[in-house]
Length: 305
Image (cartoon, rainbow, N blue to C red; front, side, top):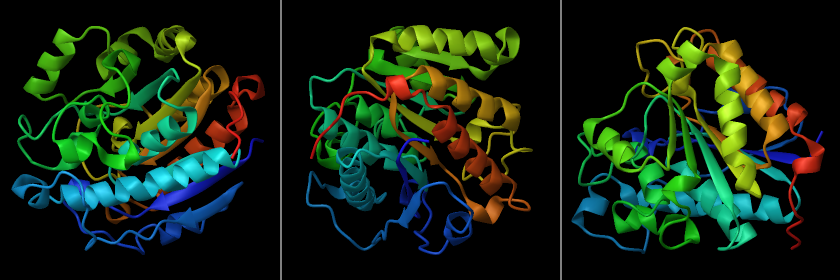
């Protein structure tokens, strides 16, 4: 099993919820095959970047502080030869995780992003209806949206191209997001309906072919991509069918075996909605498959220190 480090991020500011430092205690207490640490997020902290009245109103300043914390942790573990796996927490933490990987590998590195999610997360401050930033992180990573988010995580500007993104499991897409996807067919988008119609194996074949050109891949898994029966403990559940729990585990297992995954996260876990620890156990199973299945020959180049 490869060296790895799990980083718990108890921050839901991007989802419009208060940070709760104790919310992930039960999850952290499970038996994990690697080190586990919890990032102490400070909801009162203020980001010194591109702040305007909008950035302060929905808490983008606090989201950016968390992104920088996550980026530092990811970079530290990558330079130490470990696979960083963040568990949280709302999806804005991926801005920091991906920025850490970008910082580790450099601006010229070819990095793909597999984004498994019921939602596209491609809104900006100009298109959002909720003004919750956890609907904006993928747009921000691609350089679209408010400057505070676009420049977050210690890497200014776009951190990848739209062509370097694969969206998997979509089943709740806002009209502006759908319009963006229609304008940019270079972004691989696979709806939940497509997976149901053609099967999981077909989806994996498409993703493996798409990822051939990348030297590294970041895997981001929003738990609301899974049907709420199997994963009830999420911040923004989508009522109609998503991936079954066993399909989600199989998807992670096969992607880990085939792709050069260098960093990952599992996000939008909300313990207050969980039933009997069902979602927590599923997170544990997903992480276990990621660690056990990852192909040694595809670990990528050493980062040094």
